[in-house]
Length: 622
Ligand code: DWN
Ligand code: ZN
Image (cartoon, rainbow, N blue to C red):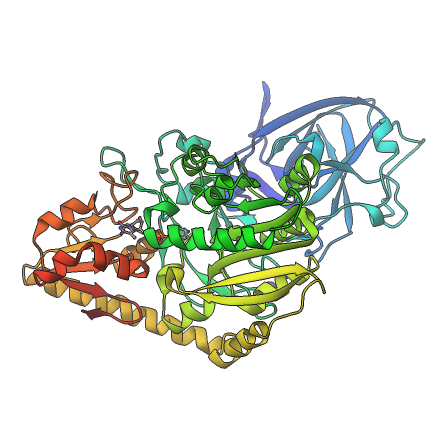
């Protein structure tokens, strides 16, 4: 569709366009849709459904919208004439609550782009009208909502000559004031074609099944909607845990890894985030149980949780992101009622084999309501290294508040922002870690849903994590640990932009230092082997430009990763035996958070003079 004129931009993001029409003696021709043209206008959505209707004069259809799976619509009239209305329902938009009306007809051939987040409707002005539109998401009746067409606050000036003909549902729509609106900002997609070139190949999910938009870009904080700006960039990065089959195409999907700090609520977040379905699916290769340390850590935590519900009748423990069931298996063994929620099939299957009841789903308000309805409220909701992975974290928080029993406890662990900044753990930043939480940001986030942070403790796992305990407001006394942690963050300057500039500078120094060291060893003819094909290593290898020239292979004990190549850098991944047999002198320790365990397992390497290359907090050979 060659757009010859943008006629109107009456509401934020809405576009009224006039396509180029070619007339000759036979009639006329015009393109009704052209992906590239629309991308040029900033419309990067993939359209998944076309709808067509015919209606008589004075029929009014609307005002319709879907509160979840919001649909963007590209609308036009094929025959006749309508008065087409869109109402902006996005609270974060400067035109929230405003309406716009346009005449669309077969004659003027105007095309209207109604972005997701708007209610839409039309009134037929001609004897009959045929109306067609493309939608960016599927029809979902359970999420469909209506606003009363003649709501007094909206005061839409329909060009009516008689009372309109309405469906029963449309005649009974709620007033705008009572209607559900979009309280979270709807993130605009980035150009999909540019980043999917050519797309990644994964077994069981063809590239074309990657839903659009592949990457969302936040210009506002995902929780408080304050504008955000990245303070640095780690460049284009592949998906951290899509290990590549050597036989398959090596071209890969990328997104730009660039973090930002919300100056209002203190939430540290990535600006660009790939869609979760691309990350967490049937080929997700991270299994908690690959580490003895993590297995015993989760066993210990499970014991603490079981102690908390001792004496409670028929307690119910829910884990969000239950992975391979390492934590819940201890609960299942005691025959305590439990439910693991895990969207990645690969690990969910492993959990079921351990006797853990597992629901394959993403967690949010909707899943929470369903579980509460079917199984009752939870005494404990637990989550390890997952809350920070979900870009719709506000919806997750709401879901937790829904599912939790009145005197229930929500406890979770996440990598600590203080540690990431203090130790320059830049490799903790990758697609899965949408957020890196500070205590302050956690307080602000959960306060919104009536949950209070009552305790926070340090855990040594993953290079420095925090374990948070929350309850409904005022249920338990707040431990001194909370004020102490907040004070420590202030002292570290976590609210200060300069802290992040200095962090960026240190990251660049590590990148240059590591690269220099690896180049030097290469020139001297020393082979370097990597240890641990971690998600973190994807950031390190791609940011520092390290490939199989500088690191011969990476040893890893995860069967699903062995025989594959690392994402982007394409370094072969081999089982730990290959490491033991290589007889080399230098190893880049990419799983540095498991250093003690790995050094113990590979004691023979040290004994024969092997050295470890570290890069956190600075580049060192030990
Ligand atoms: O948050 C996350 C954390 C919990 O786990 C996820 N987003 C993804 C994942 O991150 P990671 O891959 O950086 O985690 P790990 O635990 O540092 O990964 C360790 C890797 O090293 C695994 O691939 C297993 C491997 N390994 C090994 O080969 N031998 C680990 C140990 C302990 C070993 O002895
Ligand atoms: Zn914020």
